[in-house]
Structure formats: C-alpha cells, structure tokens
Image 1 (tube, rainbow, N blue to C red):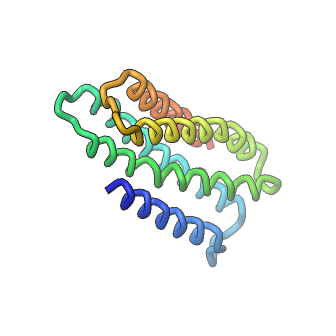
Image 2: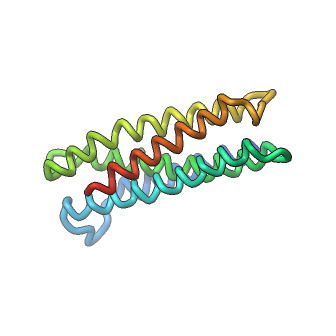
Length: 159
C-alpha cells in the first residue's frame, strides 16, 4: 500500500513537472501568469491547511488508524509539490514581476520552506515502523504545517 502511494505520487509529480515546464498557448503576459500562479499557490495552501486540520482532529479520535493518516498525507503531498513548482516558475520570472509581486514571492518562500519542512517531518513520522499516532510530536507537526499553510494563504492573498 505504501509503495503504491509513493509510486502514484512520483508519477503525479512527473506529470506536473512536464505540465508546468511547457509553455501554455495564449497564457498572456507574464504579469497575468504571475497572478495565476499566486492564485494557484493560495488554493494549494488552502488544501494543505484543510488536511493539516484533519490530521490534528485525527489525533483526538480514539479508534483512528494509520490509513486515516495516510489518506491525509496523500492529500497534502501533491499540493505541496505544485506549490514548489509554481514558486520555481515565479522565481524564473522574478525580474519581470512588479515590486509588489516580488515582495510577495520573497515572503512566500519562507512559508513554502516551512510547509516543505513540516511535510518532511510528517513523512518521517508516518514512515516509522512503530508509529505512535497519538504522540504529541505528531500533532505538533500537523499544527506547524497548518500554521505555515495559513501564513502562505495570507501572504498570497495580499496580491
């Protein structure tokens, strides 16, 4: 089950890379593209925040199992990868961005790094052979992921 999920994530990430690397016909100016990317980042951050909140709630349910956590992990990782790709595209067009969008990009990079760190920590905890789903550290990771996602939503909403 775990290997299937990893394989599916790898395939999905490859498709996203191919999709975002190719130029879109009629995409418009870079300003429009930057606005679209920031909007997409915000939407992905909202998905991550929702799943992080669900992870926190799972820690309070007595009969929850690993599959419930794994399901939320599988809902978190694809948006996190899309955020990374969109941030990379914005970084490549940084010179042509308005000062406000450049500032938003710079501020959002810290939030993106916090999301990446929190998803990594969750992945490490979920991958342990003897996982304690009720451990305070697990719940803390979910909270920090939710906070980073909320910060990113706030940052990208400013534009």
